[in-house]
Amino acid sequence: MDVMTVYRKGFLRRVFWAALATLVIGGVPNAVAAPLTAAAKSLLPPQWRASALWPDLNTVQKHPARRFHGFPAVYSAADWQRFIHAYGPAQRRLLMQLDSQRNIFARQLLARAARSHHNGYARLLALRAFAETFQHTSGSPVAVKALHLYLRRLSPSDIKNPVLAAPVWTMAHELAWLGATPFAIRSQMAVVAEKANVQLSMDLLRAGQYTAAEKVVAMLPIHETNRVRHNALLMSQMGTLRALTRQSIAEINFIGTQFPLVNQNAQAAMYVLLHAAFVQPDKRLIHRVMRHWPHTAVHQLGALLLARHPTPMQQYQRAQLIISACHGLGRSILRDRSFYAALHDLVAFRRAKSTRWDRVHRALAKITIAHLIERFALPNPDVNPLAALIKPPSADAPHAKSKSP
View 1 (cartoon, one colour):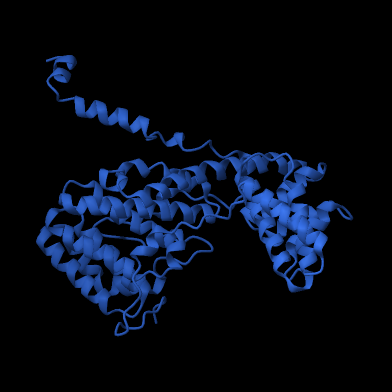
View 2 (cartoon, helix red, strand yellow):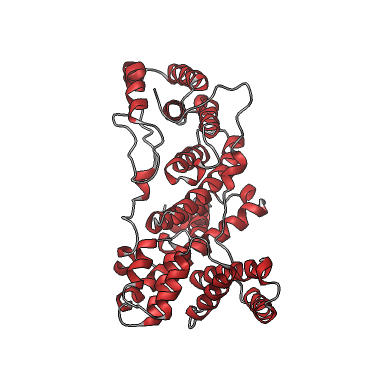
């Protein structure tokens, strides 16, 4: 039987249309944004591999989770040693045991995690319980409980840590992807996976990890099911994330072209100052640029950007310098966030009681505010879809700690 005969009989039609849909909705990884240039990477922290964020879901975990500089880990080294001491031999025996015995072991881990006063240890137990149960149908309910327990051991501040948000996406993705999971659970987990994807990508962008964010955003089409598409808020967040990723990479690539000109071109120095103030805050970079331009508008803007408690008039001057520094910029993250900072300064100037008799500057500030609003002065987006899944601890729950004794 040749290929066309197989196609006419309908066996290959689903594969064909699935592949076509993947291309249309952006399944190609490079469709999200242009790659980072070498100059842009020099301005960013060392870039992570997205795969390094995923937890180990093997039956026997031999090594603790990887640590990332500047971010709290999922669990501590003491938590890992405690787990190996208590459950290491039992975990190795699972390789020769049935699925039902793995389920029993996972339930024991979850029961211990529920009683634990230490968030890190509870998260480790939840991940191991998930790893032992998610691949077979009888273990899916236990795996779902493990995911819920992991979420209960996160706080609103924890979900803004990409290291802690990555396991949520991994667990929800596996439950939504595997055929062993019942359909009703897969449908629910697809929504959770997309929320976790948005959260993780936003966290990575905030951390300056653009390479990893680009890889994670490219996986959004995997779980874009009908249930997800009927969630208008989630779909809007996904669209915002895609646009933000493209714009962020385009912006840092642009700054990469301007940075070599900082010592020679005042306008390029202004662009770098705005980037270091409103996109990727970096006071050391602001000081570095200021040293090359003493007694100029560049130095004046840098000093005002670093001012901790500026006076109303200094806020007015800073806003005017920011607007002037945006000369030549088209619609971009750099311009929008800079304009929003100028808008904030002008509003604060008009609200200050000490400026109530300065009618000329107040009138000019009012006109400029209207102008900035018309030109789309926008703040940094704060999209945290996982926040709705984080439940505050109950009054009778044990006080949880982040570190082991």
